[in-house]
Length: 212
Picture 1 (tube, one colour):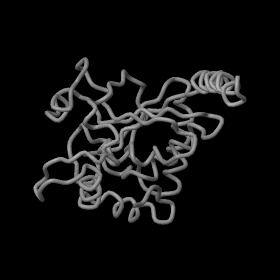
Picture 2 (cartoon, one colour):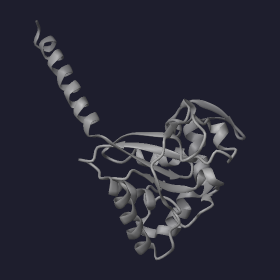
Picture 3 (spheres, rainbow, N blue to C red):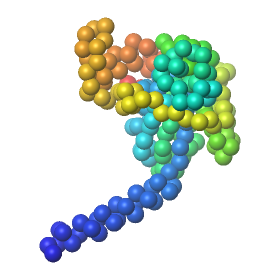
Picture 4 (cartoon, helix red, strand yellow):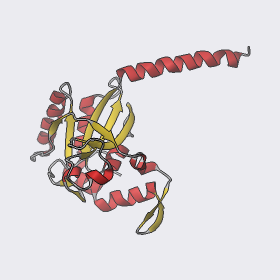
């Protein structure tokens, strides 16, 4: 057996071991911050985050579709489920980043997206609740404004369909009012037109996160 062939099974075994360790220690956080494409884009750039899934939570309908949620009758929020390694990034740090990348003073939606499904919220487990509330208190002190983003009990999370996953970096072509565009290009134009980064910077100043 050649040296390279001898090493291959050892390398594969090591990868399996590392993978099992990662999955065993991984935790999840669920945030609703308006358009889930934008929140997904933000948090996939954070070291220690292994996956971000766009989806829905907090409503009354089982297995909701995007078309169900946008009717604003199901009670769901557009949200993301973030899988992270707590040895690399803490849950509290993720909450801090989330709060400073949203308009925490807006109870009617986020930026140009209006309605209940676009409201901001932190969906926390019983273990996460105290840390989430502590970060809200810190954010309120930094901002010196009333924060309306609530900490809500964790609820079942439903992933959105594949069309909505990794939208911000997809090269798939879609038809827009400006003609055919890659999803990533359309996303960039949407994010700017919606005023997300401009509002976050105006609200948070030098504490703003994820500005594009």
